[in-house]
Image (tube, rainbow, N blue to C red; front, side, top):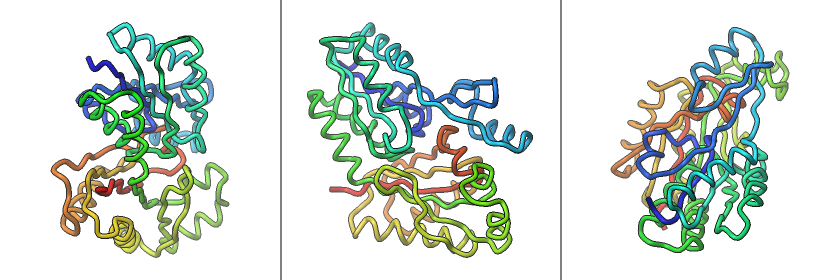
Length: 284
C-alpha cells in the first residue's frame, strides 16, 4: 500500500468502487430511525432511507462517526503499513466529523496524522480525497498531499436542484403550507456551497428551468477554464443523473471520466429525494 493512507467519511459521496480504486478508506455516517441505527454504505443507502421516510412520514437523525470509529480506521491503516495518514473530513460547518477525527489522533501520540477540514461536502470533498490519493501515489510528502487536497478544494464548484420541498418541511426548515404551495407552483430551489455549508442560491420555476440555470451557473463558475474533474450527484434519480451528464458533456468539454454518485444518506436526508447536481473542478 502507499506509505500515506487517505481516509475520508461517507459524506464525500464517493462510490465504493471509486474509493477502492484509489485506496481511500471511508468512515461511515450513522442514520437513526428512533432506536434503529444504520451504517451508510453497509446497511443503508439513499433508496432505503427514503423508503423509510415516506413510510414513517418523518426524517431520521444523523450522527458523525465517533472518535473510536476514526481511531479504528487509523489503526487499520498503520497495521497495513502506512507511515502517515491524511484524513479529509466533511465541512466542520455542517458536522462534528472533523472534531471526531481530530480527537482520534490522541490515541496515536507521535504518529503522523493530518486531519483536513475540507470546508466542502459530497463529491467536492470526494475530489479532494482523490487528489490526495493521487499525490500520495506519486510519492508526495504528507504536507504536499494535504496541500494538493486543499488546493483542489479551492477549485470545486457545486450546484444542485431540489425536486421537492417536502423533506425540508418534514425537517421544520420550511413550513408545510409554504412547501405545499411552492411544490404546487413548481418552485425548484438551486443549491450551492457557501462558506462550507449547503445553501439556497436561487428559486426557479419548473425543474427544466432550474436545471438549465444550474448548467449556466456551472459554466459561469468555470470562467472559461476547462473541467479537470466532474461528477453528477443524485438522490434516487439515476435517470435524471444520466440526462444531466449528457447535458453537461454536450455543453462543455467533459473529462474522460464523469463519476455518477449518490448523495449518500448523511446528506440526502437534508435535501430530499429527486435531487440532481453537478460537481466540477476547474483546471488551474
